[in-house]
Length: 235
Image (cartoon, rainbow, N blue to C red; front, top):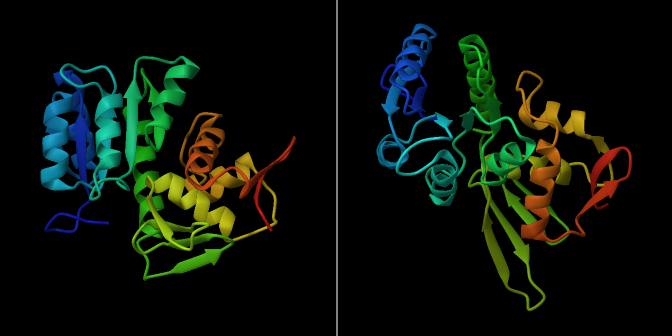
């Protein structure tokens, strides 16, 4: 995790509602966070790339670029693809939630949501990120080599070459967790507790969405669905 000069985590808050920006800024700083503010998607990308914050709180409905587009761009940036993103929106439909997770948001909270919940989820996301700021560690299983230090996945190809893949933080952490326990079946709740942490609120389909995204990248054979139970990495 990066931090400001005094060691405080830096949170980039993005929303086009000035009242909410001011409210979150005040409460985040009371909690000991440093803050930076952006009022639209274009400004959000500029400040994220310049500051490389520890956490981004991102509204969906914004002018110029909406939160979905911003999140997509952030996940394509080598310096920001693992930055925790909390997405806030007035939309509560499941399809909208899934779309937010699809583009790489770590959690998706529907407005109205209390400041205390936002602060709690911010702390939980930062704790989760800290767990993976560890010394170099590689895991090799089947055709995959998972480099936890560089957040890279390498997959051996049929011609003997190696394909390099970059994944958003939660996709990477989920793949690493399952691959660390080949053959063991985990329920969705066990996956949520171990990868997101027990204090992080996420919608019901979060695990399924992330599994689908991982399968699109590494192939469907390596992660098996155990009907009525959950998922396991191929033994």
